[in-house]
Amino acid sequence: MFDNATLKLKVDPLILGALDEDITSEDVTTNSVMPAMQAGEVDLICKEDGVLCGLQVFERVFKLIDEKTEVISFAHDGEDIKKGELIAKVKGDIRVLLSGERTALNYLQRMCGVATYTRKVSDLLKGTKTTLLDTRKTTPNNRIFEKYAVRTGGGCNHRYNLSDGVLLKDNHIGAAGSVKKAVEMAKAYAPFVRKIEVEVENLDMVKEAIEAKADIIMLDNMTHEEIKEAMEYIAGRAEVEVSGNVTKENIAALTDLGVDYISSGALTHSAPILDLSLKNLHAI
Image (cartoon, rainbow, N blue to C red; front, side, top):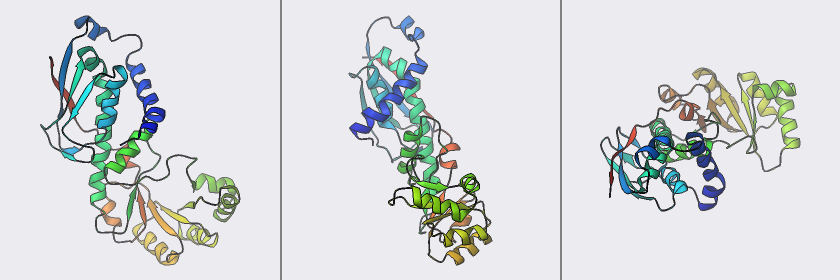
């Protein structure tokens, strides 16, 4: 759940932007059929099994239109929800319920989808020492929501953005001239509290990263045997992350390697939405 400061400073402006995108001047349809205030309520129904995530954001959409709107929840973020389950009731001005419906559901369905997919992937790592991480492959202006959904689903967040940590990828190494030079330059520039992570693609680059004393080595798109060989060479001298097209279909093949982290962009860029709906709107 987002704290009040995060909600007001980071979340509200994004939601307001989404509402502005959907209502540029007025909700013509709603104003046509509901010209005056009328109290009502509507049910939030789950239409497929999954993990609930984003109920606070769902509620905030309606509250930002009219703070008198009330959301009565029957489940909490992180809980398993089932097809046909009543998740919540939304009460308030029917005009608010109609105008906020799509934006509220867009956030909730997306966040539930990411949490559900992450849960499926994280379950495959149970019993191992490996931590599941997300990436920066998020929907623009939705990173705060999607990374929260990853945590709700049982994963952990990698760096939040470019200001959050040093990760020397292939093009950074190309710009610097070598792995060793890139790590040296990063250590000279970045605050000493920052760990230095470097992406490598072969054993020669692994050796160079170890020589440069990188804190974390990311083995990118390497084969199972190459990862195993790299792990034997690193031998605990750096933390190890594996990355590169990791999905729920292939992550199980990596569980025997004993790496510290596995990162997967699929958690955010390939998770399908979870189908939810607002139904049974009526006056009260």
